[in-house]
Image (cartoon, rainbow, N blue to C red):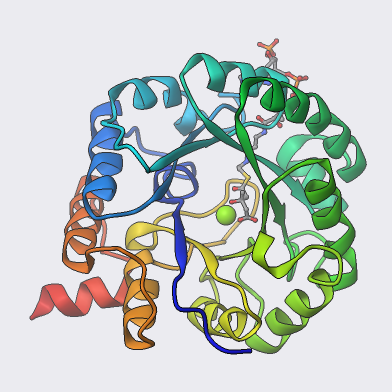
Length: 299
Ligand code: HMG
Ligand code: MG
């Protein structure tokens, strides 16, 4: 399949990146991160989560973050909603797009959202209905698409029906998440081959954590499969609280660098993006997880 001319990046750093942080991060620092990302040209930013604060304490201030950010027209500012309560809280905070999240493995579904895969899909139905009534777009996630921290290997055949269910209930796009970053390029190609029999490729996205250093290769493998939407995290922030040892998503800077080299447009200003990543890394008191940012900053 020819490579796409354009790729859309979904910046998940403020949500997937920060949700796992044990240290307190102020609302002001989160707002600054989102504003920096807007300035860098990201067209889609996942700002926070309306989940139980007992489960993910770091996302508790998401409504305040939404209230503080400068929203630029044409940019999507989204949030996760695991249930109707989360959706209603998101709506009250002025959120115009939400994401629901299911898993391809039963054990991860239980640990992450405290219910079975099929119960989670039922729980999303009222969200979809409320979203339709309020003109809110809903994106879907499937976690553990290439491996599960509790069940081990996950087959593409386990992923496909969950992706289809999300698509059929009205998710305009389904992002396939390698939550623990164990997948390799061959498995990634097969995943998209199998899932695209049930959900059109144009409505699929790739979400690769970089735990095993495979994420960039998996993005390239996905491009070869005709996928042109990827989730990534500035400075490679993050991990998942319910997937021990999982590192952050692929760094947005590294994906932008890859795409620039391939002549694929993203609309993102790499220098500004690197500056955004440097700032949040210093707030967190740790090294930047982007190889490109580290190389550029050393020059
Ligand atoms: P539960 O305990 O089964 O829910 O949790 P419940 O309905 O029995 O409620 C329990 C308590 O939570 C109650 O409070 C509710 O009011 C409250 P209490 O009476 O005990 O004081 N509650 C809420 N509070 C705030 N907002 C809400 C909400 N709902 C209930 N929306 C639940 C079920 C889904 C709520 C819980 O398991 C949860 O919040 N899970 C979130 C887990 C999460 O955020 N994980 C990380 C995101 S997923 C991810 O990172 C993967 C992804 O990046 C893709 C990939 O990498 O694969 C997307
Ligand atoms: Mg993730």
